[in-house]
Image 1 (cartoon, rainbow, N blue to C red):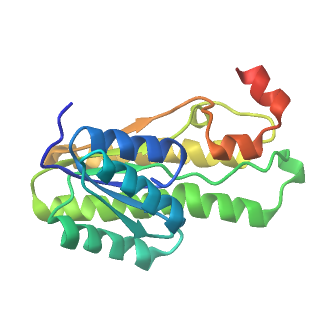
Image 2 (cartoon, rainbow, N blue to C red):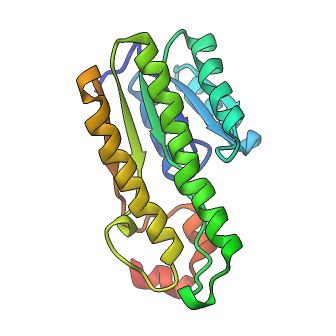
Length: 207
């Protein structure tokens, strides 16, 4: 796929699946805005894209902060002139507690990132695409947990079910404007977050 002339933002593009998406978009010729909280990691991803002949810039953003997400959209358009593609790779780590052992604070933190944060990113991308009037494409990185239930991951599963609902609704609402909203639901993927969350014997069993 050739994406020369397109501009993409990858929210959560500093690590894991988001980083892989940012690098792939750069290889395909898109100008890439890498957005996330880890400045060192984000700058490193942008540098990798530039070293391979692409165009990329890191933008600091905290998806739990509405104003910084809105400013991200403005900054991307100011830097690159438009926004064609949005990839939202947003996830908070699983604690591994069963539902009766969970805490309200963990529920609120999980949904603040995985649901509210993803919706804020979608809203920003949709607003920019609607304003330009040239369509676009949004891809939300969900999880197979959005279709199942896993022991010790109830809040994560619930939040990823919500991602499926936001994705399907966005698709129905904005298809008439030429904006495609799709989801990808990976199974266990060897990322830093998974390695931190799962003990070695679990990773070996998954493999």
